[in-house]
Image (cartoon, rainbow over all chains, first blue to last red; front, side, top):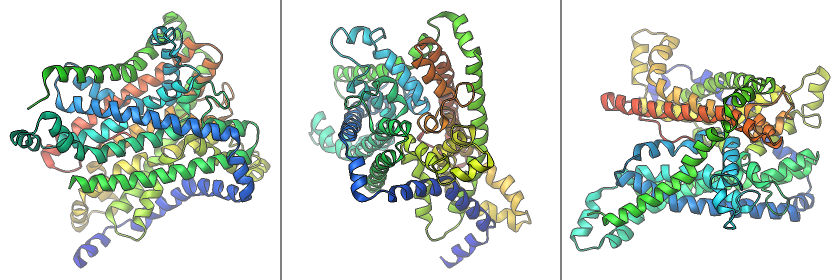
Length: 276
Length: 282
């Protein structure tokens, strides 16, 4: 241990690299976050509470968290299915779909919003059939769910895939040899080891959806009380030069993001321990 | 020992239908709509001075942001991977923070610092320096949202590589910079390129943070994603899709490079069992 420490210290550049890291981190990340927190301290508690819980804000939170939850649930269900199919089965186009799964990560959110809004509009490829059937994508909460599903789609697939690949099929085989049916094997042998990564993927997809702005504004129409998400309301407050209102809402979103980050870290630790 | 064939095909069918609606159709639709009014209209939309200005601004922003984040990524990875010190896990958490903050909130932070009512607003005003509703604000906001990309790719790779080779080079008389250029940098090059590709994709495509600080002045502070929004709001959908098609092309190139790099890293890993293949995009 002692020798190892000595070996570590023998490398040069610790002061320089840590110095650059800390000064850049301070300039780029800490000062901006600190500025927001300092501005929030300007508000009294009652003022903060009033600004953060206006009826319009409450409606925006409901839509943001509700739509994010539904989108994360859709992604957990179909993402798990897609991961399973990609790992376990052979079919034409498998590798192409596999490479394409990361597409929502790589596509700028504005483009995602633009193309989804068009697809589900009355004249779009999907809206053409859905709108006459009464399924309105554009300017509805459903549209918000659809784009949030798109932007969060890769998370569940990508957290489940490596776990599925490492899963020993021998365990399933021995379960079958011992007389377990396929369904029972899946539920009792496979599902427990998939649950932690599935939950992690769900949480990642949810966290991403809560902060999302670019793609949503194209499809939602930003109607107050109906299709206005919390980040869009912050932008609205800024455009009214109502900085206090914007700061109060931003603080709520930031606290929730940090809580989610903490939950995700805990989940990843749990999932990691589960693997071993 | 598998599901019955009919179950398998139903599962594959559902998975493919999901991929069709949430991957394939959105992708194809971008190019189909961009060309819906013909090549001439497509070309004219891109060649419009306001569009070329937005392309230029997006490229300039990426050209500033990438070196900044590369310098940060290399420094942070070197300090975190090669040394033990107190507060290391806190530092790693702080580096990741920008990813968990909503882009709109990120943009708001820079408004609070640099706008006229912000902490440094008057100081900037006296000197006649514009940050908000100007290019520097766009650069600041973009650096913030892309800050963790290079660092988080490099840290695990440098950690896995250890420091034995650097030790050997130094013992044999190489200078610290020689060691860095000839030993460390080559051993992390694929991870570094990977991080830069992801950083670039996000820098060019960022919308929320940039839209808050840019003021969207046509021809001056419109980046490509902002130009897309503006054209869309002007009911010029085909024009919006034309600019968007360039961004979608960028996404496809990013994906292709990412797949190629993972393939390459996996092959090198099989040969030398060094540097693990980078995984995941965000």
